[in-house]
Length: 471
Ligand SMILES: [Cu+2]
Image (cartoon, rainbow, N blue to C red; front, side, top):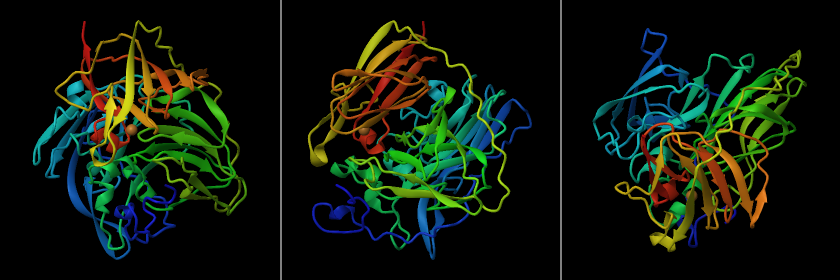
């Protein structure tokens, strides 16, 4: 499969994947994603307006590209809120098909979480209202969660960052970058390659691997910094299904946070980090002290079905003129992460596939998604062990709505593998043939989706309904 998706070479059974790739402008200064304005004068409230609509974007020289965006931007506006704040987002859908906004990773009430059960019809407006949960400071994102069309909607540009800030941030002294990674297949005339976003059937298994990897909507942007600077980067994998294996040329970095915010202690000295589709990571980087140096943030490629195989450059970092910044040490201790166990119930979630080619389906516990069926039941607040059992030959990043969970076990070829650190996640990669065990609880009542976040897999059935009962 190496080099096949988006390689631009036609012919053979994979000819349907060929498109004449656009020549992107590269080397532009890294764009900072503009923040959505808060329309409320009250400090405890955030009020904003989002409109999802088709619009004409300038992505490649001399051609317009028809994207779908929030407020005509790619990526959509950054929402920055505070723990405990009341959020009121007025959302208008001008896409011509049902849409929603899902607040990925935040424990908001089920009827405010943009599930496919609550579609916003074409032309309609609704308000999303929720409190930002205490203790949720971290890096999130928002995107549509409409029935059967998520690959289309996210793949056409509907994705944006959401940052929750807390009152007490041990890393507040560091300058920050938010890096939202998307993939987009655009041809030489500026058109979005339809095969990458809208084709049902067999190709859905590979859709996530099609297209250019972009950072904040740019190909190979340049982040200008200063020699020796220590920075905090929030990286969001907003691709429809591409695993990122992040590496920084000649540098080690510390991971300080995951989906649900900071770790208890930094993981220093890392050379790479795999970020599954929909996951986030916060890293602290101290760049080289030499002036006028240039190096790259790369995706090394995960191989297999959903990766690029070969590595791809994402963003250049330039140190510029000196003098070198003084060294900044990351605190050895960041915040407490409570052990949410012990569990009082256990559930099995089996991931499988049926059929091949255009009739192939992706299944959870033997069934394809039906929003009129409840697949799993829980009780609000009850801690459960979930065994996520992947019987397929592909990895699946499993996302559970409405909560953050902790990985407590992993089984590789029948043997238990160690879990090296405790972290809050809302999306966990379940490697092919392996079992991942999580500790999980739903803090709020209602029906929640859980699903594979390779969006073509989700659209092809790998999603189920969890109902949490209040007691
Ligand atoms: Cu999957």
